[in-house]
Image (cartoon, rainbow, N blue to C red):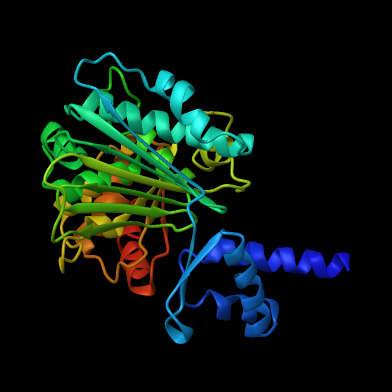
Amino acid sequence: MARVRTRGENVRKFILQNIEKNPTTVSRLAADHFHISRQAVNKHLHRLTSEGVVTVTGQTRNRSYRLTAISEWQRKYDISQGKLAEDVIWSQDIAQVLAAQPENVLDIWHYGFTEMFNNALDHSQGNDVDVHIKKTAANTEMLIIDNGIGIFKKIQSELGLVDERHAILELSKGKLTTDPRRHTGEGIFFTSRMFDSFDILSGGVHFSHEFGKPEDWILELEKGLKQGTLVLMELNNHTSRTVKKIFDQYTSKDGDFGFDKTVIPVQLAQYGNDKLISRSQARRVLSRVELFKIVLFDFAEVLTIGQAFADEIFRVFAAEHPGIQLHAVNANSEVRRMIARVTSNQPS
């Protein structure tokens, strides 16, 4: 009997973990995963529905499931007077809303909230910030929205970048800040890596990262935000992830505990149908790379690169910075051949 009970708990746990991304097919997914019938899975779905954990809409083939919000909380903060502090807001409000979660989960929320709220305080030039938290049986979702200048536009303006999409490429590297006296530039980078999903919408651009995926995504929006920045963070309530594990991924093993390793999604340097051909494109990718000791150039989704592009990174820059390790990852055969071609011309 205990074995049957444990199996049932595992089925329901699987449903809760997968229902958000598979609202119409979660029954089939669970049946395939546990090698049981759809009817058996539907009994578990019915139980979750009767308990109020899951909400169902539609009939038969059009049936769709979603997690029911256990609680929702929202508050608007006036930041125009410069009197708020993110740690005070955390301890007085946010930590109370997120209470009763495991310590490692609260640590991630503590880091993510304080970093994102502080960005709004210090950089947005806005008047207020809305914080909205929704909790379900499986996940917690947080929205932080300010009415300021917009994060990508601010970075583009302060650093003289080509456009807002270039700002996302720089964010993906880490160590980007428009105020180095007060910030290290690590906050957004590490926050985006800690959560199950992390999204920023600002202007006409949407930046997105999912945990475990090597790439970041840029989506151009037809109807973007006219002003301000929207940050969306989502995390499983029972993840085993820790803040330390995420920091350790970007620290080399030579005893230096600093943030000295980065992964650069090269595909973000491609605008539209542009191909990565020129040295100027390569220099855009190489911007601020000298701040790191180990650099992984992620060529996922990049079909081809030009000789000048490869030469600028893997021969010219490599020769000028012998103390920096440069590695190409997820490169297809054509990209690897071009890199091999330029590196074979290096003097011994």
